[in-house]
Amino acid sequence: MSVETMEPRAWLVRGSKNYGFDQWMLDSGFTAVDFREVGDLSAAKDLPAMRALLAPVMPDKSEKAIGNYAAQLNAFANRMAIGDIVVLPLKSLGRLAFGVVTGEYRYLSGTGVLNHVRTVDWRRPDVTRAAINQDLLYSLGAFSTVVQISRNDAAYRLGRVLGGAETDPGARPGVALTLPKAEDDVVDTDEAIASDGQDIIRYSRDRILTRIKEQFAGHALQDLVAEVLRAEGMTCKVPPKGADGGIDIIAGSGVLGISAPTIIVQVKSQSSRVGSEALDQLGGVVGQHQADHGLLVTLGGLTPQAQAKVDAQRLRVAVWDAEELVDRLLKHYEVMPDLIKETIPLRRAWVIDESASA
Image (cartoon, rainbow, N blue to C red; front, side):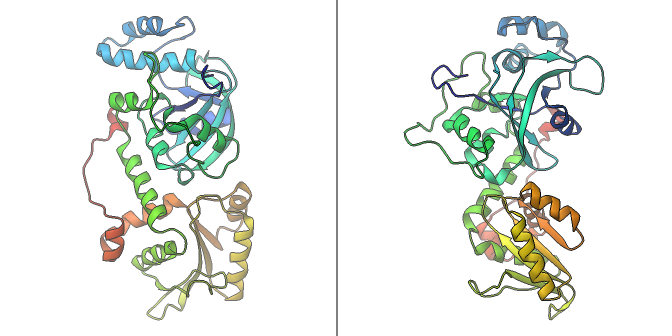
């Protein structure tokens, strides 16, 4: 823990490029790194020792690259403390898992596992990216395998989310919004991004999501959702604001919008998760109006109880979370109205796939 604050530090640990290991880490109670070419790190107790351990097994790497990897592995094996916060990006889901480190470094032998591990109590494995403010989302997009997240009161903020806060509270009053100077054996956010790069695709999606949260707050989000549904071939009616009776959008097929399938849409723009009561309300409205389906659009995602209810009635009620909304917006962006394009100005660009080449 930090001597200055006595608070746990916060770490991003990406695990492996093979996203199949994400669920393995959650199920096994591990945070882990995929340096399978490197053996047991237990004997390397500091940065110089870690450099000496890595150099023989990375003959094709530059001295700078070896130093960067050594800093990451030294942070993972030696500097990360029991009680520290660890965040695992779940790329396949577009979510974040939050946990607390509970054990010292261990080496697991064998295949089909990540060999370098520490035990973790994964307390919140389903935090939506919409719950985190943009500055920390940028930090959580670093390509380095192990990064200490310390900018802008990050440890406090991520600790609050770990403890159950629905949204990132932002920095505390009086805390300077600057990046503390990194020690020479700590890979910190800016250093990590400069060395290994930023996940540009993830960063771009997070920026789009932030723009949606800022520019389509409250009832305005239903207008964006309606345009996406229109691009998918639906005819939509948006009831007057304040008198919707639990209906934000009525969508249907055909010119009149009354042909099957008919859909009752509720839109929740808040970053906090939506509970089962919203699903119960939507289900009641769908039945009352004899619609075919219900669609709940929620930037903050669902509580576990609500998700279980959706899974049990998936043919009746569908859910779009923030990731799904961004996917559909990008799919239909070319046919979006000019006002949408002006509010969310995007352009296509080819980028190096750092996840494949890093």
